[in-house]
Every structure is written in structure tokens, then in C-alpha cells.
Length: 380
Ligand SMILES: Cc1cc2nc3c(=O)[nH]c(=O)nc-3n(C[C@H](O)[C@H](O)[C@H](O)COP(=O)(O)OP(=O)(O)OC[C@H]3O[C@@H](n4cnc5c(N)ncnc54)[C@H](O)[C@@H]3O)c2cc1C
Image (cartoon, rainbow, N blue to C red):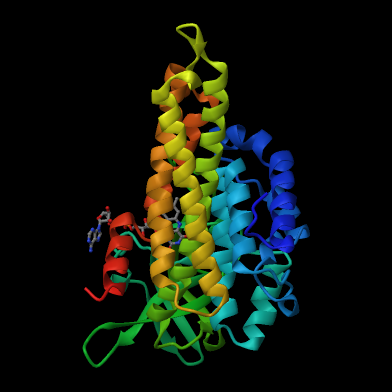
């Protein structure tokens, strides 16, 4: 029992754990092997209200808080890192920006079906030549009458192949200092000239759908601008702050899965006449793993709590994302170590956790970028 959780949060935890153990965990190894995106599971998650968990009921959501959402990400990630990533991206990147910045009309048109789990959305920021340096975006959107005409390319965009629309960042001009003005636009995936391919062969999170996007004179109406056309850059920074809480939660979930396997194995594996869990060297590893996970989970809850209270949470979201992803990587690595040679074999399922968790140190801002964000928050 997590004493710090409310009754509602505890109920969400139990409900999602139960769902993930039945509907996701038994198939995770197969989806990883086949790089299969479990669309049917997303339909079921939609029916359970998970895709609209942190949005108000008036927008088709479940009216939950950010802590409940982080708990859901952790529990899905504990069952399958790839499904967890796609779930986190659907909510934090696909739907949240429309909730934060959209007009009432945009919310009704795009957010409500996503929150109800009827459609998925994606968020296209990264480009082949603009990753950490997102200000270096090269995709352009030029106003022509009442429409923007988009040209350019995006890479590694989660869920795009299954999305009804993608929020795309594009350069729409230069400011007084000669810097790019970046605007966010809602682009329907069936727009003429919009090509979506998913040819990547990934190391991990293989159940997640990852796409390349190409825009060739894609036209969208002016009404599809999301939020302030001058503030697309600021908007995605806010979106990523929220997204980092979910990536941290996902790292906690993956680490928790690896830890549980390691603990169980250590109690069962006998060497030198006793279970290896009786060796202090193994005990110390398990103690460090358990402590790191607990600390990271608390950091996730704190950042989520600050967000729910409407307080600044940029630093705490970066703390949580950086700590949870690096801690999680160490935990998954040690889980293999505790399994010895068996851990190196796919059959035991721990190597998948290590491959999955590596992405947490890269996506939604690398560890290096998190340290930059934190340093800036410290006033450096
Ligand atoms: C599976 C997957 C899913 C993804 N999903 C999405 C998505 O849905 N939407 C989306 O927009 N993007 C997505 N991404 C992209 C992801 O956010 C980027 O990969 C990430 O931001 C890093 O950019 P990059 O890969 O271009 O690395 P680069 O920016 O080229 O960085 C390379 C290295 O240089 C370091 N570095 C860069 N700048 C600095 C600096 N100033 N100081 C110190 N070190 C620095 C980085 O930390 C890194 O170690 C996804 C990526 C993957 C792999």
C-alpha cells in the first residue's frame, strides 16, 4: 500500500496494474520481437478512460490528476516499455498541447475524440538536423491566403502512423533579432502531400510506433494554428516539461519490472550451496535498486503534484526525468548482472528492460539537456 496516495490514486494503480498484467505483460516479449504496435490494447485503454485520464470530463476525459496519470504510465511501462512510451506520448504529446493551448473549437474537434480513446495524436518536433536544438527547425509553414503551406521533414515521431493528426512545429518567420519564429500547427494525417513512414528498426521500445514524416506542400487552414503563432517554441517547452514527468514515470515502471525479476531470481538461484540472495554483494545491489526506484518514484510524484497545484515544475520535472532514467538504466543493468548468463538470454526478459530504458535517457530531452535545464533553473 502506498500510504501517500489518495483513495482514487490507489484505485487507478490497482485498476491499471490488473489491466496491464492481463492485457499487456503476457504479450510484451512477442511485440518486442515483432515490433508490433498493439492498437487493440489502445482501444481497450480508451474504453477504460486511460487515454483521457488527466483531462476534465467536459473534454471527454476522466478528470484525474497528474499523479494518477503518472501512476498509469508506470504500471503500463512495468508491463511493456514500448506500450508505455506510446501511451505517454499519446497523452502528454498528442493530446495535452491541445488541452493547454487549443481554442474551444479545437478542443471539441481534436481533444475530445482523443480523450475518449477514439483517436490518437502525435507531436512532431524533432527533425534530422534539429534534435536537442529544436530552435533550429527547418520545416517551414508559409501563409497563402487562408492556409498555411508546410514543407519539411520530421523524424522519430511516436504514434504518427496511427494518429488522426500530428501537432507539427514549423518556422513561420523571423523575429526582430533574426531568430526563427516557431508556430505549432495541427495537421490531419490524411492531408494531401503528407507522407508517414515507419521503417526504423529500433533497439528497444519496439512495441511503440516511431515514424518519419515528410511534408510536401501540405495545406492546412489558418484555424489549425495551435495557440499563439508567435509562441510555438515556448509552448513546446511547456509541453515537454509535462512530458518529462511521464518519461520519468515510465523509467520507474521499467526499472520496477527489472528489479522484481532480479529479486525473485536471486531468491531462487542457488550457487555455493545457497540462494545468491544470501550473498551480501547481491543484497547490496538489490538494496540500492529498491532505494533508487523509491526515490525516483517520489520525485515523479513531487513534480506531478507541483504541476497539479499550478506551481512551477520545470526543475522538478527535469530532476525526475534525469534521475529516473539514469537510475533506471543502472537498475536494468544490475538486473542482468544478478541473472548472470541467463540475463543475457532473451528468454529471461531482463535484457528487454535494458534496451527499453535506454530511450528514457534520450527522448524528450537527453540527460545532457536535462542538466542544462536544471542549471538554467539554478540561475547559471
Ligand atoms: C524512439 C524515439 C521516439 C521519439 N519520439 C519523438 C516524438 O514523438 N516527437 C518528437 O518530436 N521527437 C521524438 N523523438 C526524438 C527525441 O526527442 C530526440 O532524439 C532527442 O531530443 C535528441 O535529439 P537528437 O537525437 O537529434 O540528438 P542530438 O541533439 O543530435 O544530440 C546528440 C548528443 O549531443 C548531445 N548534445 C546536444 N546538444 C548539447 C548541448 N547543448 N550540450 C551538451 N550536449 C549536447 C546530446 O545530449 C546527445 O548526447 C524520439 C526519439 C526516439 C529515439
